[in-house]
Image (cartoon, rainbow, N blue to C red):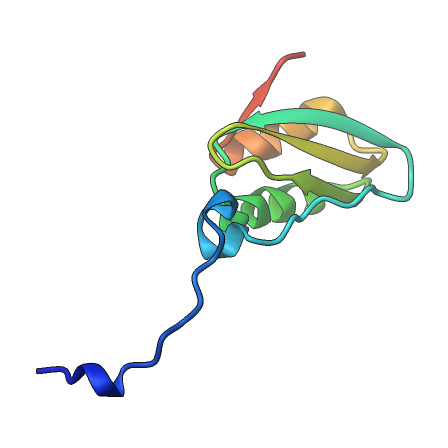
Length: 101
């Protein structure tokens, strides 16, 4: 059995931050002109990284910035000259949904 005197107490993330991988705000404005997309289904930083990698793999994408809203609608800014349809397909292929347009 475990002895309570040998446990290390770890700090908890604030409850408003969601899971520990969501604690940091990952949104930063791209430096070039950007197209904005609203995504549904992102719940954590891993989700954001999955979308970011999928979109960055597209030809013409210079940068990707994601404003993560766990369980809500997240905002994605894509810098560069990638076609909106290509970005939508990359997001869909990653397992998430683009809302609107």
